[in-house]
Length: 167
Image (cartoon, rainbow, N blue to C red; front, top):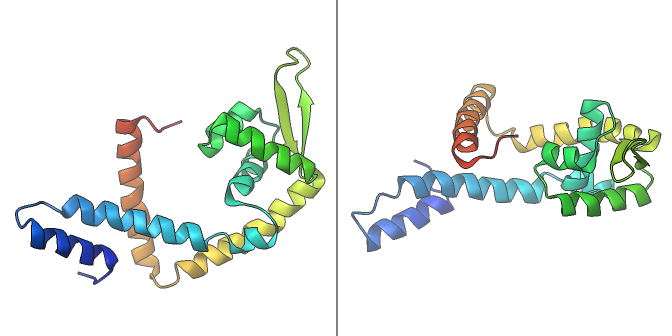
């Protein structure tokens, strides 16, 4: 077993409570620690472009669906709250990366799409971001990355089904 920070915490708990089953703590602790470290590291190309991960996720959702989306659809696509999406869309519109238009039948509904500048930015940044993420994972060989991705996918499907996180 590796001697990471989570292993140290687990050993401390086992020392003060020897009968305690710490297996869930070891796994979930490592997932949480990895997520926290990846969150700090993963956004370097985005930061250089003046974007947050959440803003890039909105732009990416519009680019990958290749159509205008409503703020509600964007919230579902990016697992964000409606209020957070509204705030981010305002900033992206001020930056000239998206445009909004009202629905012809229902003026309360807005449709949001990429401007040419927004599309160009996503098309330029995505390869940079993927290369950066690939370098972050470079300590794992291809077989290990594939196995880990599959195992995390299984966990995700199980959690989404149990906790209602599926879209």
